[in-house]
Image (cartoon, rainbow, N blue to C red; front, side, top):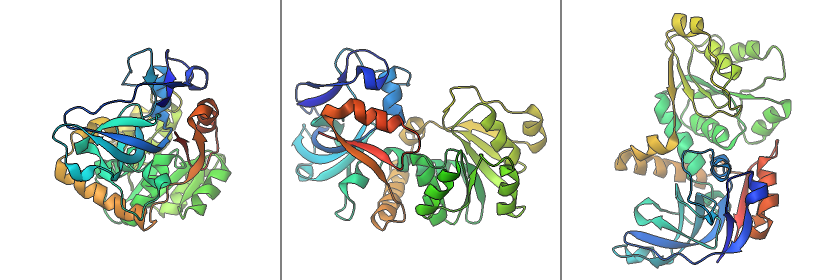
Length: 326
C-alpha cells in the first residue's frame, strides 16, 4: 500500500517520502480502515521530528494519527455490523497510508450529514477542545481567554464555548487573524499587533472577571494571559509554540491566587469515563453536523506530494487543516 514513511527523525519535509508498505492485518479487537482523508496535525510533525511524547520505531515509520475511512476488515471479536461503515479514528498510528488499524472500541461512526473533510479532523482537535472546556469548569456567562485562537483547537474552543454560552477573548498575533476569526462567526478577536491590546480585552469584558485562560505559546505570552485573569483564576498550559518555559510573575500568581495546570489531551481523554466520552462525542457530532462548528480545510494533497503538504501545513496564515488523500 502507498504510505508516507520516514526512516529517521528530522524535518518532515526532508525525511518523509512515499513508499510501499505491507497492508496491515487486524488483530483481536481491531479493525482495518481504508483511508479516505487524513489530516496533518502539529503533533504529527513533532512525532516525525522525534520531539513528541510518542516515538515510533524506526526505520519505516508511517506518519499520521487521525483519519476518516471505510472499515474493510475485522479482527477477532469485532462487531460484524461495522464492516463497510464510514468511521473516524484518532490517537492511532500510521494513517498516512491507504490502510491503517484502529481499536474497534475507539472508532466513531460518522453520520451522513458530516463530510469527509470535516470527519477527517473531527476527533483529535475538536474533541481536545471540548475536553479542554470541561477541564476549565466554566459555566454559562463566564469569560475565558486563549491565545493562538486562530489555530485548529482555538477555533473549536471559541465555537464550542459560544454554543455553550461561555464568552471567549480570542488572542491572535495579526490583524488578519481577527478577520479570519470573524469570517467563521467568532467574535471578541484581539490582535497583539496593537500595543494597547490588553486595554481592548478589558473593554470587551466590561470589567467582568476572566475565570480561566489557555496558553499555547509559552515564554512571556504566559504572563500576558496571567495578568488578565481575575482572582482565583485558572491558567492552563496547552502547548508551547515558542518552545520556551512559561515566564510568569510570581507576584501575579501570589496576589491573584492563580492556579496553573497542564493539559495533555491523551491523558485527559484516556482517563475519561465511557459515559462522559459518549456525551461529549454526541455533542460534538451534533455541532459539526449543524455547522455550529466549522472545520475548514486549507488544501488536500496526494501522498506523493507529502513534502509539499507538510510545507503547506507549516506555513503561517493558513485558513484550515491540510489533508492527505491516499
